[in-house]
Every structure is written in structure tokens, then in C-alpha cells.
Length: 82
Image (cartoon, rainbow, N blue to C red):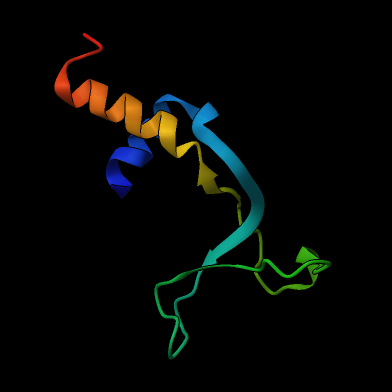
């Protein structure tokens, strides 16, 4: 349920329980990673040392309050919250 979760997080950002803000790039030249988004998660890495230009810093959510999301989603779909 990635699309409903995306909408849920936009409407209720408090659903995010764990996140990082990192520089991110879309790799366009690689043999195996062409078109993938890349973020360097290694601890202690200096983002200025990377050859990523002025890559934007992006909020990456990697955990959410699943129980609250599912409850809200089911209530919305079934009309229980109307």
C-alpha cells in the first residue's frame, strides 16, 4: 500500500516515526544503478566530499506508525470516519 501510505503521510506527517535528511541524487550514468535514487547512509561520511554538486537534501522516512495508518485508512475506505 505504498500510494495510500504516501498520501497518508502527506496529510498526517506525524505518522512518520523515523526519518533522515540526506543529500540525494538520481544516478544517470551507472551500469547497474541507472535511474535509481542514491543516498549515502554510511555514518561519518562528509557530504561535501562527494561529487554530487548541489544535490538537494531530502527527508527520507523509513518507519511509520503502521497501526494508526491502517486504522485511519480502513476507517476512511469503509466510511466509519464520515
